[in-house]
Image (cartoon, rainbow, N blue to C red; front, side):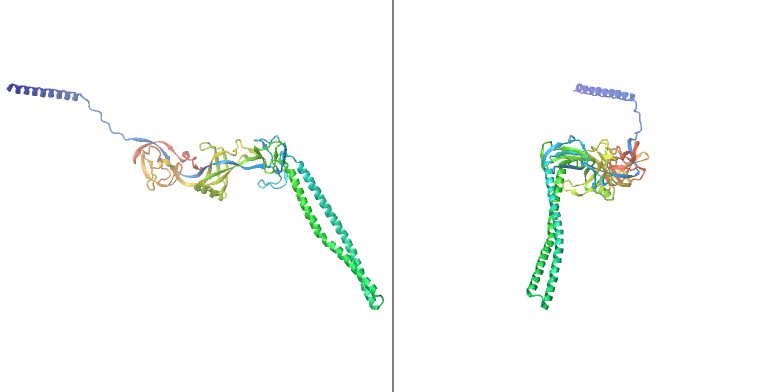
Length: 462
């Protein structure tokens, strides 16, 4: 029993010695380790870009899309019936044709004497219409001859009336004399009766001639109306003869041809379509709010300038002006049209690349001018709710959080009505990491001159 207890105590002592030796070894190794070097914690500095605030004058740009149409285009149809007997070699799509030239200087109404007629593009067989014109001409000549005959009859009647009047007056005087002689008993009753009958015979003759005279105005009026009708028919026949020569109605380009030589046409048959491309029009549908901005300028007598391009990212290729506005809105799209006119021909010279009908273009319309405003990039404004919008302003190398009031947001810009003044430098980058009083290092400074000039605003420079 004592031997067993003795063995246990020996094991305990050996374990204790082993632990002491191990602990001493570890302590010795630990004493050999060098202390780590101590250093101060560095403050993080954010590299940022800033926007320098300035009060500027901006012109708002209203954007829209529209299709180009010719300001003047017509589908010319036949006005008489017949076979197409002649076709010009220039009656082809794409050919330029010359229209009439007017002596009048009024290019809108095109009234006045024609200095030169348009070129003949085709001829409809005129034989039937020439015959009708000749027939109408003969009928007019016959009516004129009848009027001349009536005039001669009226002159003859006038002479007969004068003779009948004299004869009646003579017979009347003779009868009066016979009545006086009868009272004296110089003539018999039979002689008195004969003189009375003679007076009545001349009276009847006078009445007949006078009645014929009274009929002449009605006959002349009837013949004159007949002559007027025949002259009208002659004019119509002459017009139809002229219509057999189909001329260009105005100077332009043939965009469609629907007729060939030998084809029989009737009034209303489409012959060709001619388009004038010297000036084109684009109807640009706008939202009612945008329309109101442009309408105010047009109603004030202005014609806002418009830059036109093939698409949103293309550079402006053509320029035009808003010349009129639509009086009603489109019930389907809830938009209202403004009409932009583009001149493809200026001062007698055709532009290098004309804007052709059928093209689809983007319009950038110069809208109202916004004066003395503070505008910053919209991305620099944090928050959207009223009363919670703010920006970071660089002050002495620190980002200072400043509350601002945004009066309006327009595409990539925000208009600031309170909180910023000219000279403030608004931080534009690293906004998600910045906090109030964060240390910053400005890497780039942008001004309104650098950032404005596209989109929906245009910086106006002195």
